[in-house]
Image (tube, rainbow, N blue to C red; front, side):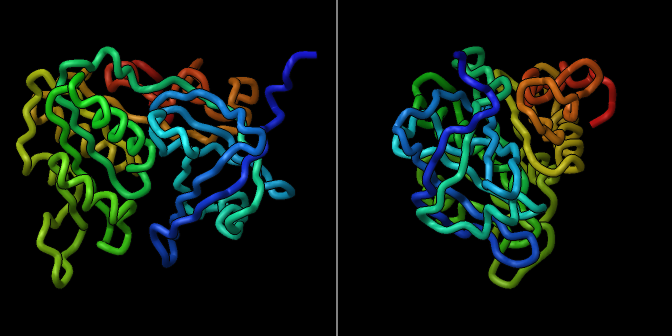
Length: 274
């Protein structure tokens, strides 16, 4: 009998880190498969997490494929399933099925400068990509990360970002001034323009709230980036993961299998439903 694609593999939570507290809490979960037999995945792909008795939810994989010790997910508490996930503790067992979707075309980007522009929880879909390119730095040009959040308390991966600054340029921002904040104040798109990023031999990836993505893409276009040089992810509601339920479609595209990664050139050709 063939494998049932709807049956998840069992995994144990081995570490939980509270990234952000308050009204929009974010936690990072590291997991290990119980049978030791997980799955291979690529940067940009997602997995369906099951909290038994509560449901399942599609979440971006935020660890790099270079990491073999755990599979990582960073989750914003929003609804029934993510709230139940936030209530779980180390040692708890959940279900994971996947991976789903396409991925960032890393082989096509070799030799190019890579720019990452993220906002809020939008850093999570790019986080594995950041570490994948950094771990294979000889294959790429300059790496630059621009990341912003509403306030300094809403920044994810705080300690990791400080360590990352030792290895590549990292430009942080918050939306409004705060006492003691010495970095950029303003939206991510403004920071992109402020840094005067060059489109020469470059690829730019942006992930975050839809309005941030739109403004960052406009900023990149103002800086003369071509549509083919800009990539983003689409976070439509995904229920099945295999293009059967139709919940995530954009026209004839199913984000769970045709996405979530798109170049701006590709996305512009699709119905403007996202």
